[in-house]
Length: 129
Image 1 (cartoon, rainbow, N blue to C red):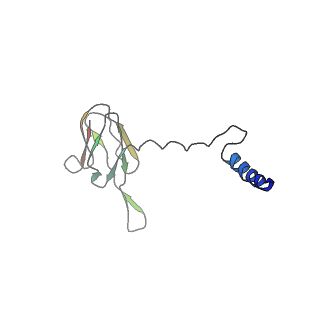
Image 2: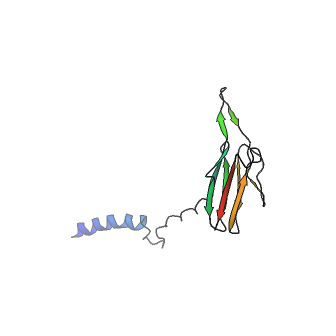
Image 3: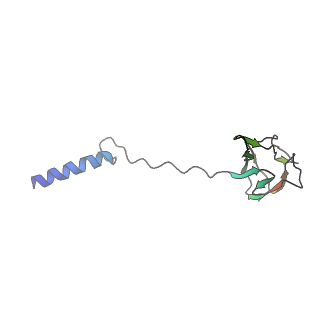
């Protein structure tokens, strides 16, 4: 019986210390909460926005990210300039890389376009509800 008690003590002490049950009063630390959901993302490509139409809730942030560079025949990259232009407010610079964001605080339909290519060629819509 004495041997059984010794084995139980040997197995129990490491678990109690590792599992937070030791005399330090600590417990198992829960994992951190998941990160908040990513904002709505739109890709600015060559002559298009993907997706061209997005629906978001009031208070949502939308981020446009430029993906306009492609390999050229010399081993480098060629990048094209585009913009995200709203008639009612914030507008991105004309750029070939980077990102631009806008938070929509009121319901409605917001149309945007590229200054370089014009509304007829490159436009998109954010529907806020």
